[in-house]
Image (cartoon, rainbow, N blue to C red; front, side):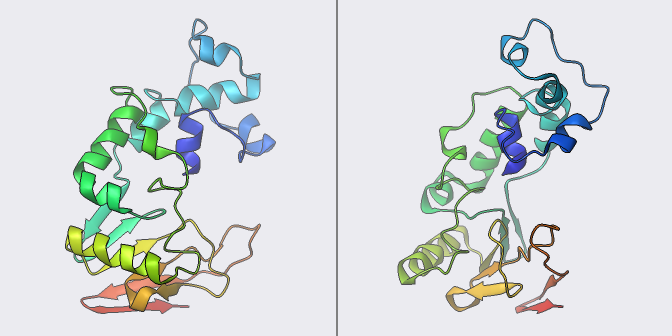
Length: 192
């Protein structure tokens, strides 16, 4: 989600030191009016992350939602509109935008985005669990694995084990400890 924020030139979560030390070898087009309005520290990062830039093109090689076996992996969560669209089309749209082949999908921002939603990871209620079940059944998978929302007690399962929230807050800001989600066939567990 933060990488995609950078792709639409929103650097609100980028520290000054990260802006100042962001790589070299990326040259900004001096005639690019969007980049011309940026501070010098933002310029190189913006040129790298904006659609068509080298980091955006690298991100475009990765799926936003991925099914492995009977598990669906996504940063925030797949909602009914994404399931109806299909993972292949959702991934294609985001990847085409990052390559600068298509406009930005309007649904990639906001709390209904697959990289921003917290519907399944922030103490989901019965309605959220029902929505999750519909999505999983529609996509033919058993569970969803999400990040995005720090789980203060470690990896947490909700909705009868149909969603596993794996953000344990390992960034220094949160002080979480390493933990791993192990999936072996139908057996899912966290290892601390």
